[in-house]
Length: 202
Image (tube, rainbow, N blue to C red; front, side, top):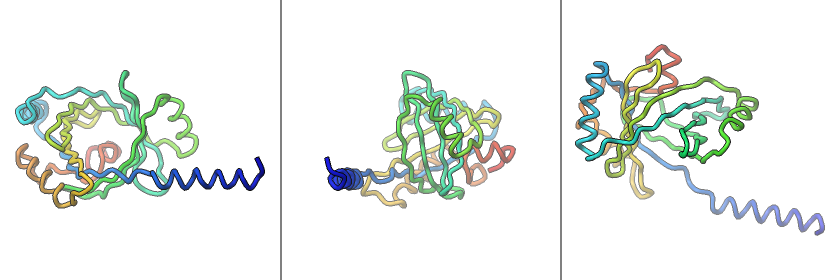
């Protein structure tokens, strides 16, 4: 195959990949502290169980965060087998209340190798570990989180459909906040990892 034909083939492949590239996935998120210790955490768990008619799914997570030169956050999420680990990039504003998060993620079969490579190329920032109970309510993922060295938290991820607006997602998140009794003082602006690095304030 002549050189010009090779370049033509490469360009065809590039154009094909560009044409089928998936758009960013979108969530509207709320993240909140749960004051009051284990007793209040259990009370909120009871609300989640009643709302979803389930006991939730326990997920043990270990997130390794890396520098992200162009902004946003990049993390490698270790999950216990048979679940596959994930590489996740997401970008959301650091504001309290419902906020739009744009993200992309891929499954990873050799997370330890990828962690080493990203550590060498981007530089690692640190690790965050948590026990998560996942509940599903209509189009929302409800997370009840016990974060190591940080405490108890909860999070809503309203998974927006392509035709839905940010406002529609915010309305759903705010209604759930009322259901669970989340106050403005409980709302977080940043991530768990940010709060861990700031000694619990974020």
